[in-house]
Image (cartoon, rainbow, N blue to C red; front, top):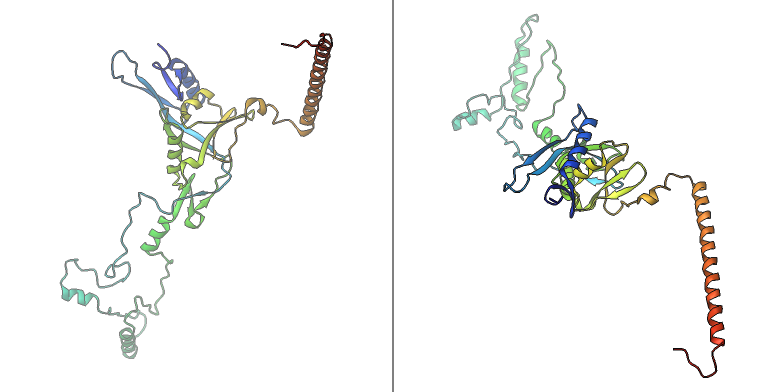
Length: 333
């Protein structure tokens, strides 16, 4: 049976046998033993007895940020419930002190609740009663009907300034989380630190666009998945761009678990650049060494050019000699 029927897809018309990927998966899980990066696998029941079940691997995949341009965050969560503003009769905005009755009160009671509150000031026990002061305090309370709190000479109770529920809802609505850090709506344009790592929960059946969509939805990023690409960046400098038809989790398993050898990077679609293995061999050399390589290549190129010139000069002399030996009036077929 060929790999297309008994295999796991890793790309367009590319399959790998179950035995091979299970062997790599065992090594992968041994490397991350005791960590949440271990992968689970299951086999889906086949449709017929002649076919084998489909192998599905799922778990967390580490993805490193490699962006150079800022990303846009959503100003509001799609799943957040938008509550209506508090009414004028609620305690949030009116702070009516007489609204402790039952909600099913009559119109007369509502009219009584909307009337100005009566503030009564009780003097402390250790001070003598002063009828003149009491009468004056009652007159002041009637003149300032909107006074919500009074203080006596006995003492003052200080409390911290608290935000209203409406202000708290606005703050929650304009907060975002990137790797667990919250940002205000003024920082909706954000650039993740280059090389910082995050992870997403995916499976081996998800292609590159699906993985990008899961990552963007996790952090509420408004940018389109078409603006980004996933790269496999090796320690040697080799950089391979995953195609839209590739399966990132399966390719990660095949590359091995060690992130010091190979990492999965998220980069811009137009700024990312692939680097082949042959070119990557020369990237880590210093400039003097690279200049010496260029000099040697130039010398080898000059030698090849001189060799070709001598060869064609020799062939030209032979052709001219043969032409001169022909009798007059003869033509070359």
